[in-house]
Image (cartoon, rainbow, N blue to C red; front, side):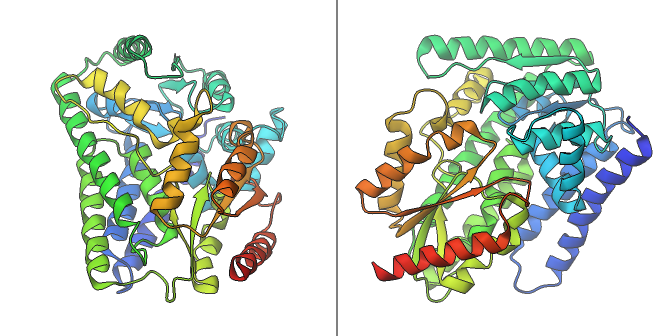
Length: 422
């Protein structure tokens, strides 16, 4: 199953793709320094995965919201499961292959394609065998179950983090114990002891990373917005792949500086900025190029993704690294979707709609995500209550056969017509 040649070719394809984009960007005066830095970060990330075994470093496959800060502090190479699958499928053009393989493995189409694709990628031997699998109960039941499947496919040991729903003292203490047990597990598997000094340094950088992300979010409130919506995934990948890493700080500081300059000069992403939109949930990965055309075609620009780019309140204390990592997990923007539905999500969306002066919202209803799909009616109702119309687009995060770009284009055009008539 795990042909070293096949694995190497897929990871090398990711590295080469990022390098090509990086070179093209350097030769384009229209591409910003921050965007160049972002693709350099991706090149470095996948190169580390490619060269891990050669350098004698353990590989840890982990799902979203497993704290990679712990892995970085122990000099373990992380493989972010969902993101690496997205990149492998999209940049190699093989999303249909990995989904077809998952079907052969017996995974139903109702299961989130990010996790079906992950199983399919490993079933085809597209990704390297990890030394361990780390997963958690965040963010959904798909995530909770996929870790077990990945252990079975790879014959690798694994550790499951059981996240509590809220942030009481008791729940925080419970999560801290889970993280301490995780460290003991990783130490046992690798024979490497935790570098507590390095972990504290990483937490300090993560605190700076979060503050910069908040600064960037505030700059996006400006009219016109100084941030191209297609770059939302850069912010998402920044905190998924590079938590507490110096390169991430450099990227965010550069981006903030560029945005501040645009705000001072009154420069717009699109002229004219006719409609300001809110994006709810994650757009399909295969449509990124198409989605980047929406501002030019309609003068409609997404200015906020409240469920993914707005960090909750709190600061991190480097002198208490494990407590801080637990605290950071509850500060994740996505945490408002986890647990009991209440004001922490409805209040965030209403406040965002007002602060960012949005004219409408687009909700990408990923059919394999039961958790997100279950709150669509609630989202629509609370936005209607403040006179913000919402368009729902049924789609799949990886599978383009569910909804084509042409279908999305037509729905968005109709929605813009509705906004024009208001």
